[in-house]
Length: 177
Image 1 (cartoon, rainbow, N blue to C red):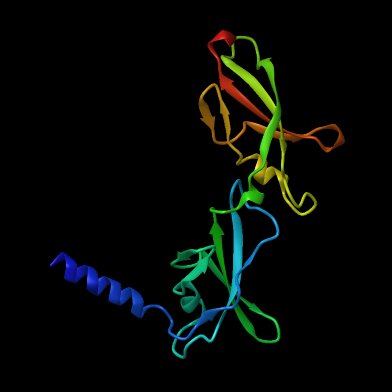
Image 2: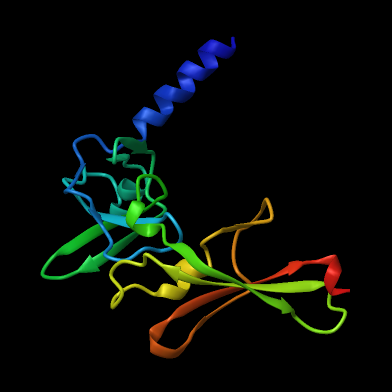
């Protein structure tokens, strides 16, 4: 019985794909949205009669970098000289340009008297498209491994003299008690 239910479910899912519709070539956004993530976008064409444009978009799969994605995470309708339906996907694989790294680590000492926390600082580098990229998005999502513990995001990011971007982590440290 389970096999038959699965078969019916798959058939119903296939019936919800707008037949004949297709995506124009899908393009990556110029900047990264977070560490290892880039948004991609495309225009849906040939929407079948009887489908609303947004429903067709939200039910139309696409292949990006060898992976089939069931549906966009959002769709928008934009009117130029005619309406166009845009689909957007967040891609978190095969995005090497979206993976900055840290260098010049410094132990900045205890954050304050008996705080139990030590401040670690490092310069974030490897951010491509520096003019267009919101470097804070990448800084706030770039992980750090310190003392065999992974910290998924820094406590704070700031820009210092000469455009140097620095991430700071306040990590637990018993010697700061």
